[in-house]
Image (cartoon, rainbow, N blue to C red; front, side):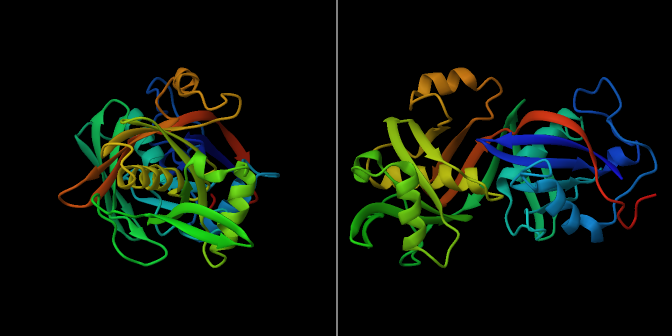
Length: 312
């Protein structure tokens, strides 16, 4: 079965998007100048989603991704992880789907609502490629308490195998362990990542190193591969920086990539479509965190998947 797809990313977190309407020839490609790839009359049975997710997300024999997005013409959406399980939260994937829905002309309003397996999710459309989604309130992984912008202490000292590690452990959709560069000492990022995971063996934590460049800019080094990973890292970095007195409650979070040596200007220069950064904000009154960003296209193609139930 030939499956047309788009490989998308946001802040380095990659997703495979399958436009289900394109399989029946009912939509147009995002540039709106030609038909989307695919053969009319094909369809995908939802029962095959888990198998397709495992195949297409495979980083050695598939396309490679943190998740797969199945998007219908009515903006019903299903996001599955590499193991074929439905994602409980998928903010990064939804921001990628918003970019596709906007570019393909499925929405011209100030917001778009996706019908997920856990209810409707709305995304605000602020501009051509500025999409905002709410992530809720942050809370402490260690104590379980809700964190507010006036919290006095979110950075904890953890003893791990004889090493003391100063970091925050915050849940905003995902579990994120954040340290500042000065707290790492002689530790490099892989060493910090290993210690962070050892500190929380029962959780799938995302290690992150955050550095406040200005009062409105945070540089982050992380490898967010969960379905909401980049959004969660941005919010956790902002919460840690705000409660440490380093930034305001609104900041641009720039994700460091290989070869830039922590230079935010070089990162911005590479970010031609604003998909390598996220704007994070913390509504003080409602204690609600938001991210604003846009998915970016990496490439498109077709994947020759095994025949699945429901394929005509």
